[in-house]
Amino acid sequence: MTEHMPPPPATGCRTAPVLKQRGQREVFCGLTGIIWLHRKIQDAFFLVVGSRTCAHLLQSAAGVMIFAEPRFGTAILEEADLAGLKDAQAELDRTVEELLARRPDIRQLFLVGSCPSEVIKLDLNRAAERLTQTYAPKVRVLEYSGSGIETTFTQGEDACLAAMVPVLPATDERELIVVGALPDVVEDQMVALLSNLGIGPLRILPARTIEDELAVGPNTVFALTQPFLGDTHAALIRRGARHIAAPFPFGEEGSTAWLSAIADEFNIPREVFDRVTEAPRRRARQAISQAAAPLNDKSVFFFPDSQLEIPLARFLSRECGMTALEVGSPYIHDALHGPDLDLLPTGPQISEGQDVDLQLDRCRAAHPDLTVCGLGLANPLEADGFATKWAIELVFTPVHFYEQAGDLAALFARPLRRKSILKVAAE
Amino acid sequence: MKLTVWTYEGPPHVGAMRVATGMKKLHYVLHAPQGDTYADLLFTMIERRDHRPPVTYTTFQARDLGADTAGLFKKACQDAYDRFQPEFYEDTKTYITKRTNKNF
Image (cartoon, rainbow over all chains, first blue to last red):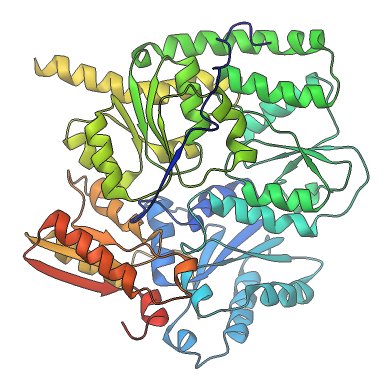
């Protein structure tokens, strides 16, 4: 299966020492996940119960212009709510009534907890149960936390999906659930690959609408497409489902290893696997070799952002000829990230959490050819002569599976290409 | 409680950041949860400035709230002073901080 790839490294980074630091974190909170979740789940509304800061973050993160009324909003807690002068539960009932009267298209409502709602201990679980009773069967109300004191960036999606798992109907069917919000076009490619392999029945979490709902039980197996779904992983296991561990489907190697792990679970013959994957694998290899030329023999430094860092470092090391100097991730889960760490050649500093000033010192000392970091750090590092890749693009751009493997390499190559053009122009 | 589907109005501590970015030899310590650092990108990306705003965030998490977060704040101030050597200091509490740490 991996005849085109170098053999796995003898030890990999799974047992490498992890640098853990505590200090200023330069990351988004979990509310940001609403930006892609509201597009993915087409009949859902995300109501943040929070502050003006939460509303401003969503506005800043979602882009400056919103042309239509979006399927997310903020119930802003005002002074009287925070001081306990008003009954927050009654206020929430009134706000939800106002919202649902205005948006009859909404079938699922997520109450999203924030820093202020958690600090004043507003019980959103109780609110969600009460509101579900009020609006059932037309609208289902669930709650999760996207607060900065609980969640880092992509953990918002994890918390949302984990909140859906306990209310899924039970089943004894042997089914595959693929978990993670992918762009529709990528999800369709993945479904085609798995169907061509003869794997099914296949369900996807999150489903696009409440009508497409899936069930879960002791004969369910599941695979994750995103490396930040630790709580959802745990919630599915609590429902009796079993995880198919695999490297994440980035690049040719990751996509093949991910599909292969599922194919093995469903006893798909090797010749079927080879026949179905041969053409897309070849296309992926060709696309990567065209796009990755500027990356060969270059070094890369990852600041922690989305938990995609470890699988992406594996892709850049093994398929693009790069050397990772530091791979920072907000959180590292062995059950999720272990298979990618096994394939990541030893050498880089693996780090979890962040003290941003100390990490900037390490980055400047290491002097990487490419730095993958958040938007708060990119321009200042560029001004110091570092080529940077905005980490958030890796979350918002279709990058999974074979047909996107070339685009993924190109995302990393672009800043290096631009830097070399600017250098030539300056000479 | 007030339903808002879009807003261009920032919170006051971002206004204080604007004051800080307009001055020299000043450092601003913000006692704030993780995620409030999004405000940095208003300056580094939207305004395309070539340096980070002179701001340090204490980045407290849920597990810090069981105890007094004053120690975290003091350490952030000391680290910021040692690193940036400002002549002036500005500190603000976000809304959350006011609620959680009344003795601050």
